[in-house]
Length: 209
Ligand SMILES: Cc1cc2nc3c(=O)[nH]c(=O)nc-3n(C[C@H](O)[C@H](O)[C@H](O)COP(=O)(O)O)c2cc1C
Image (cartoon, rainbow, N blue to C red; front, top):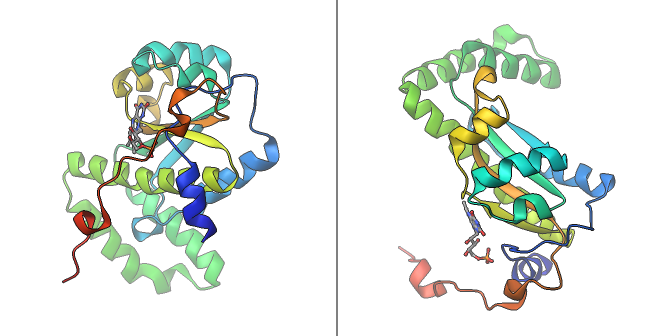
């Protein structure tokens, strides 16, 4: 199975070759892999910023535990979740769905109300947690797509969310950085590239009931 081979090939890259950049055509595929991610109700309550500006990467590095991936990788994907869910988010989705299925929005009213009521029942804090969770699914797809394209990546939570929100002016857009991924090509000097995978055994990880 090619997928498993690719997943064995990938690793959380510590040192990128800063001279190598991901090309536009591959970038387009990575964006599509994220776009196709599953999300709760299909609402996709997040936005993904792709940082290629060296200037912004330099600003983000001190807010990222000084991790060198931030300035050495080709692109930094910043998955930002919406901090509150408003009726408009649901109405936008209903409009998209009605256009795609060629049915009137009236026919989707029941579904729309169901979503509004279920999400509205969550506290604002829980809504934030819920929208942030969705970003991890998208990040998982990004990691898998990168592996398939033989592009290296490092998923990262080692950064200061508030500082990111400040640097990228996310608060005013009701967004918050949730998780990030450095994407590019491994440096020949990355000693961790050939490290064995540390994983629980299949027996430990699974239980059939
Ligand atoms: C949500 C998440 C956050 C992570 N944060 C960091 C990080 O800030 N810096 C880093 O070097 N690696 C980070 N990692 C990489 C993990 O340490 C790595 O995936 C794990 O040790 C398994 O190794 P592998 O991905 O190389 O197979 C993170 C991974 C995940 C999934």
